[in-house]
Length: 140
Image (cartoon, rainbow, N blue to C red):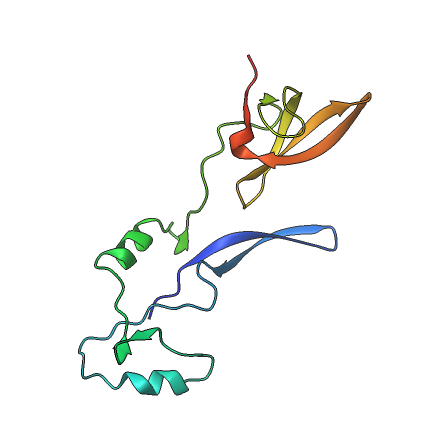
């Protein structure tokens, strides 16, 4: 049995924490050595909704898929997700698309869903804006 997990940023009551969450919510990988295995019993296990089946039996995942997912685990067994953000906090960036296109701001932080928070000067105030990572570039 294999449940790939990743760290997710959780914000609650003005507190931020990083907690392990399933990479594929409601899914789990199960090893079944033979086709004659009593797999129907798995469907009656507490917490299991059902196996993904087709043609009267469980659907196998493509060869090497689980191994590929495991190759992305860190030493804690957590999957490394997202891209590496090429900006350090305070780096000057330019927004290249969207509502704030052509504005210059300072990189603040990255979120877990490929969005970043930047500080933009609007009407004489520093305003936090969440934008897609793809919509900013280093300001030169």
